Amino acid sequence: MAMPLRIFNKPRNRVLLVLLSAFNLMVVSAFIFIVGEAGFDNDMPKVQSITPTSFDLNYHLARIDSGSCQENFPRQIYADSANTYELWAIVQDLSTIESRCGKSVQPMRLVHSSLTETMYESMVVGNAKLGVDDVMLLLDWADRFKYYAITDQPHDKMHRAIHTYWMEVIVDWLEDSYKQDYFVKYSYKFNFIRDRCEQSNYKPSIGSDTTVEKILDNLILGKWGYLINRFWIGTGILFKMCVLVLVLLTFYAYGLVVRKHLFN
Image (cartoon, rainbow, N blue to C red):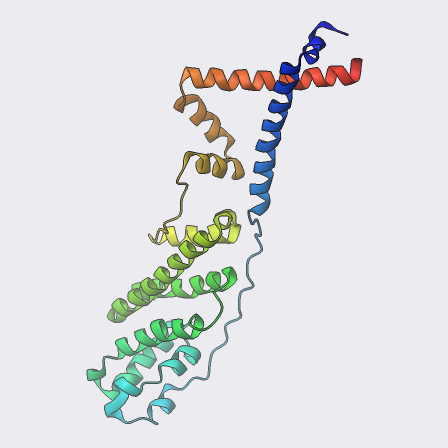
């Protein structure tokens, strides 16, 4: 038997080899498990075709007394049927409310409550949790109001308030989804929504809390250059030497195994 292979004759060395092999197997298995649990579905939801609605607010307001618009405004019907995909339609509805009910009812408040609390209750309360595709479509819809606020200055406060309301709902959804499933933060769609929120200055409380989480996050995202740079700059000489010794021992042990099976 060749001299290096005599190391296997000592029980202590065989135990060392087994421990090194078990350690490496655990590290690789943990990484494969984490990658396997992460969602990498990058199929975007189908964009719903937008067709003009035949919603007539005049018809619904004519059925209620002008003095009770505040209490009896058809919020649910408006949330379900109004054409909110075109700015001119919303502006026209505001004008209709004012002409039918008067300024005292504050038309912007009625539209705001219909397109926020009332719509949210019909979407979420009593129903299953919103899915990721639902949230992506909701985000596209809510983002319209950010641009409505720029174009429609007389009603910019209402548009901004609607946009803020739904962005906060979406941020809460991100945080709740993360609490329920840690690995969801590796999902393409989840990160797409998260990035869109952060672009609008709505940052969910999701992050890498521990050093181990940060390392795993960067491994899964393939940021090898960042990891090497952090290892080289952020660790001391003693730690680098320990890691180097462990790597050399691992390769040496596996090299002995290969030689034993191939050349003995």
